[in-house]
Length: 301
Image 1: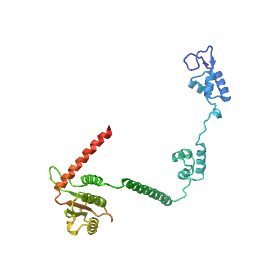
Image 2: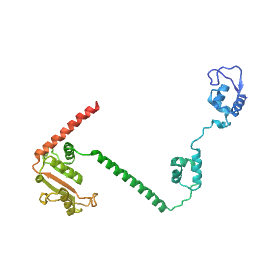
Image 3: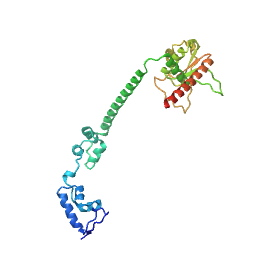
Image 4: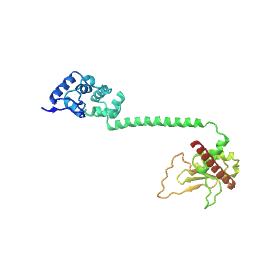
């Protein structure tokens, strides 16, 4: 028989005289377990503080029912298995129980897979309908976000239009280079709203309509005449203010992505005798940059 001698520091409860056989100690541990004691209770009662030894003493003896922690998902697991046996898919079980597919998979993966009740075409059609609904919801959310953001702007002051116009021109307008002097105000864009805003800015600056010249820039495969009518109607300019349309020619490698009825090419707007205006625009822009830098430094401190 195995004999266990208890010594200080061996994890078995401290100094004791004499010897205790393993089998006798195991009988005591099992008796206490069957009385309903927990592992901690047995450990304290027998002064056995070595976990490996305690495991050996209780090996094969199930814990009492009261020590088992109830699992909140036990009922869900059983219901999931019942539904799976009825032939429901993971998606259907998820809708029924409201739990994740990963949990369902763990609970029912040992059960036979239900027979397919739909053809692949029917399943694809159902999936497409679900995806179409998702896209409609996303589009509604997208539009609502834009409407809300639009209302956030409210009314615009002349100073705000002035600052927005300077930033707009510096982003999209032509610029002077030290190696190629081009001190003239020219703006090119394909967005009608950008064109409208830019013209409102020019009017705020006092630029006369007679100083403006327009020209359409467009792919050769587009509706050129229709684009010319579109831009002329948008800006309300006289035909004499429109210069010759610039047509982009294609070659074998040309791939035109901007197609459809909404494509009208770009509109270039030139301001005649605009060197002085260009210099002021550039000065305004650097003034904005300096003011923003000062404000940023103040916000950092």
